Amino acid sequence: MSISYTVTGKVGVGFAVSVSASGFTSRVYSEDSYHFGSPGTVAPVDGDTLHPDLAGKSIFVGPEIPFDWDCFQTLTEVSDRACIVFPLHYRGQVEAPYNRDLDTYLSKRSGADEFIKNRVHTAFHLYVPEKGCSFTDCALHAFIGSDYPLITNVEMVARTADEIRASAMPGLKLSGPSGISPEAYALIQVVATNADGSIRDTVSSTVFLEEVNGYLPKRRVDLVNGVGQFRVGALGLVSGDTVRVKAGFRFYTGLADITLPVGEV
Image 1: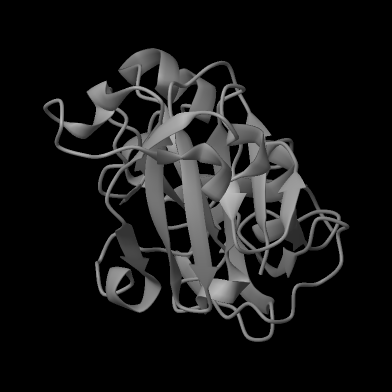
Image 2: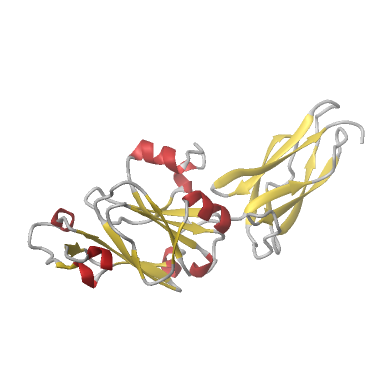
């Protein structure tokens, strides 16, 4: 498993991350003792023992913060296609992680909008493709400052958060007939997809449905090997109307949609 990163403006601290198959540990480091309590609480170390770019600097290193994936998954807030956020406290300490989609799935705020609202820098994102997956199926992304290098025990890849999200997270695609007759039903197929549009046959998630126009007898469908199907009806609709259905995950709704014109088919 590798770790990707995006370089932002100066953050004031750096991150030392040790990744394993079951989670990761992180430590915050800085030349400024302000981030580590009262003066004298933490003794500095020689920077060259941490990273060549820190040679000649006295570096303060914070305590090790563990993150165990199996333990975290027992929380009810873990869901399919989830973005787990690790906030960075203003004093430079990584705080408890949470599922950001729980806060934003109704407002549809982007990560940038969320930052503007809360003014909280994010240390890490963990992109979770499916509830119950292994930690190595997830993607860990760090938001590092330009002032300190990322220190880690695994391969590092410079990528944008959008690129990592697109490659790690499943998409959805809906397909069906070209139209639907008034008062009739149509069979719609829903498929989990990879970034290139191919079927993501490892996904066995529950897809949540929402009708904009039309009638859904069921509003959830379970995927098997990345594929599922459901029926939608044009009940109460007449020629010239449309049936429209949106599909997504529990806390990431409206990921895909399909529109069927209503008329004699």
